[in-house]
Image 1 (spheres, rainbow, N blue to C red):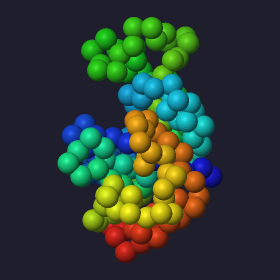
Image 2: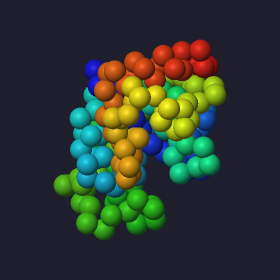
Image 3: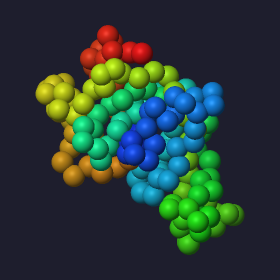
Image 4: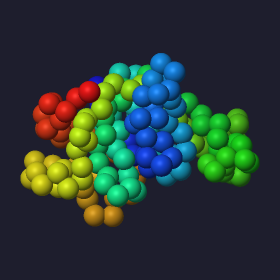
Length: 156
């Protein structure tokens, strides 16, 4: 099993939005970075990920999701009405992919960026590196376990 961090702006799609979806499931679409797309293509059913709120007053890890459907073509790339439209995308040769995720639980309060940065055990975590803007990144098992221990008494 692999572990991931998936970033979303809460004004666009938050962990609360996911929790309120039917069966608490949704596809993770709109990824338009090749490296993040390639990470997505490595995801397998059963992989777990941190749901990270980004580009907001207080960014941080809001909860955990599970991958329930592996990478498949993202149809928003073909829709001219979509903000994720890509005129170079073709139905018979997908350029962009998405996975489906399911809500597992939230951290309340969530684990904010300031708290993540305070722990030397996480100093090499991709999300904490200067200039990192990828919406999907791998998380090591040591990072995964450490963050879950931080959030152990915050699960709801």
